[in-house]
Image (cartoon, rainbow, N blue to C red):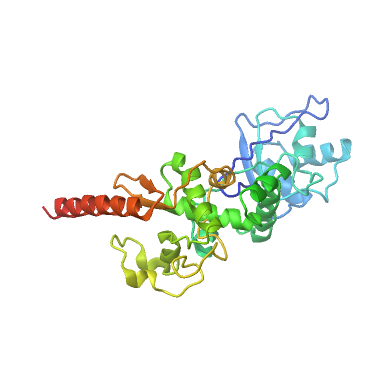
Length: 301
């Protein structure tokens, strides 16, 4: 089944006219099919008749013979049959192309919604795990063009996985204001370059799975948990991503803002105040604590 990786849209491929044919399907509206496994000719013929695309199986096998369709090459996947599709285009659309997928197979959008752990991902994908992994890997390779590989070197990172991991931290730090992504990305890159621990709150929260979900007041004891993803304890980039970030965030990491910031602090509105020195940062922290105190007091009234 086709899908999207790290939030990108792959588009829809309609069945193209490959033959001149006056014999057309019976359906008056588009009909959708989903085959989780490669269908046999008999299975495909049955489904097309049941859905009202063809009047009978004789039409199917007649077209198979007339157009020399390989009945052993029908592919699993999602298909959309438009009204009045020619028989030749209909059958050819189910045949595997050079990429091993149906020629008219539809790409579908899979939203991960900031998935953090494998069970979260599993609930968003089909049962075709092997196909899913293969397509995700293919999209990952397609994303990393020579141009992006060069940008990766320019910012001082060694592997695409490091860029994705850093993007995941940026996204968990700021998921609502895209214009802050390149700023936060550069802030973390500055810290890496200077050998300063990232000290990103989302990373130590990741060490606690569900236990810190909904917790508004994070304490020092939370930051003290010994975990390879805890960037308060370990320097550099964690072993892997803490969520699946949209590709736009990875682009922000590869195209960071030209800033010298080393610190960030929430301002209470969903945005951040940034600072270059510790003194500036302490002022931002004090302002945030003042806002937080007023906010908590208002909730108690």
